[in-house]
Image 1: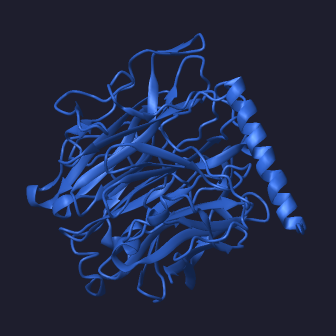
Image 2: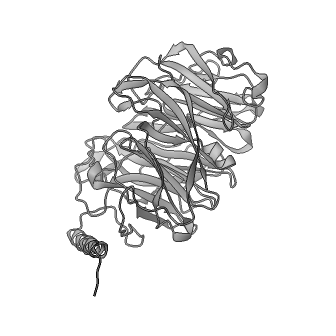
Image 3: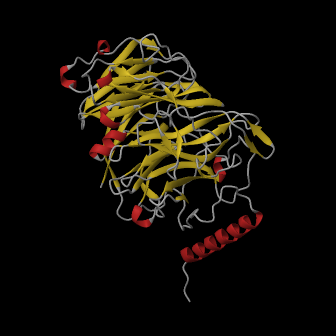
Length: 496
């Protein structure tokens, strides 16, 4: 019998995996298993060379320099332009694309271009400089289709609101407006006249039904925070009052540690424009003696713009003064213990069938538990979680390493036929990977790698992807040393 070396290696790999799986099961090392749900797929490939799934591929169609951007000497990396929780630093409307960032001189900036490849027109706001080195303090934008206003929120980590808004029609009739700083308001600390918003972290704007716009923020701290919403409705005169969605109170216990306060770290806030449903997923971060540990994948949806909330099973769990909290029934769709090194604020999308998907990373199945609040990237993997139409949640492990850096959080998108595209940064390379719905997402593989070297985490233009099928990614070059300015780009790809 003739056996080639590759076959021998494959046999040894399978034996090793099966032996490890048996020993891990016998030791009962993992606390986040579910016997009813597929956990992982044994592969003969692992890493960037994993072949692309059949029938799914991407091609590069453009790369455009926007400006020279800021880098910093921060506690959470060198990048301030391109953080995972910066859900919307770029957006498309009326075939113009808009990007917000801090430039090399620390100025709040916004740029626009006519698609597909027009020159960038840049506004630098000389009246506002980013003065710190905390890369939580990102800048985001939102566009309201109803009146064509462009909204900016920037420089927050528990700070009062910093907000400015354009004149109506700025995005609705872009050729008719002078693209200058005078198009925008002064910096404001409230959305309603005379009503200062005292605490903002992780702001984001989300387009919702009837051409309106949601503003999402955290009120409070990373161990005692509440998710707040308000809605911009031009037909009713502008911004609504804010309302609370999540609560930080309640008792959580794990291995003799007790917490009575927490925060919901969002993977995303996404609106299904076909079904009119708003999707929210998150991990809890506990106070007390948990350090910065996260646990559990939680999910809720709303069909009325975030005022009433339901769990995955369809039971009403929030709204009309009722807040979502640690004791809310049916909230955790997958139990993940605080000892699994779970990261936060990663990737979420909604597919063409209305099913939510989440991509996150934590310890691989079978790895020993960690002290809550610690992580081990070398022993972790990216995981894809999703909800089937019948309400069953499933999970699969991706064949990629997790980079040991502050820029390793992923994003995920759905194609029109519910295939998926994932993206993350590994050692300065942007990895675009994919999986197909027809294979139940068991075929995650590499679609394309952009060598860079890139800093930050890849952030997609959700509107352009949904409306034009073009994947525009916001990325900045890796600096030779912290604090050195580098070029900010938009990278464009298209399904083949």
